[in-house]
Length: 246
Ligand code: IPE
Ligand code: IPE
Ligand code: MG
Image: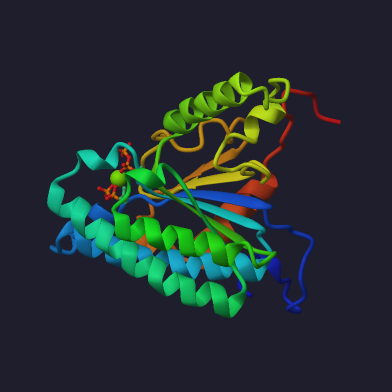
């Protein structure tokens, strides 16, 4: 275990990782362009980076990792790039299924799954089935995900439950249960690599009180040390939730 979690004697210090980390996986295209490679090469390396960071998160005791891999707006990209991303996602999910079984990891897909290619939909079903067997570290992958889409979808489902007499009183808490993230705590730390400082329609409902951390490092270059830096910064933040300091 690297970095801030160990003091010089190699013991764990009292610096605690956030319970839930969210990451916008950005900068794959620019990473490839800098090397004279097609953008899709950046996506391939980026998926390896995700694997490494997810393992690291699990090892240091993060409970939930939610990553933004494909947005509802990313369909606007050239057909060839979208096609390659979908293929890579299929390859990734197939391999992830093996890891989930081996390491007892839960993995959920957040997003409009019905809008994904049929082959991916089948893999999503399989990951759901495997996830239901395990407790512990949970990785959430946002695919065909949009924050506004999620909220509208939640409102639609609530209205339907109401019409059928099945809806609880509408509160922030009950409405949260209509989100893809139902039952899991909100992200504590939102990391965006790649140099942009915007939310790009990610977890709009859930990030109400997340701490934001931006870095110019492009996602394929992101390392556990970079994550340690973000966590160290997170631990220096004073979270007040609208109150005043004790
Ligand atoms: C993020 O990297 C991956 C997806 C949005 C699918 P980008 O492809 O957005 O990379 P940049 O931002 O163009 O460098
Ligand atoms: C956000 O990155 C979406 C994902 C990482 C999946 P984009 O590259 O699509 O965002 P913009 O276009 O810079 O806002
Ligand atoms: Mg981008």
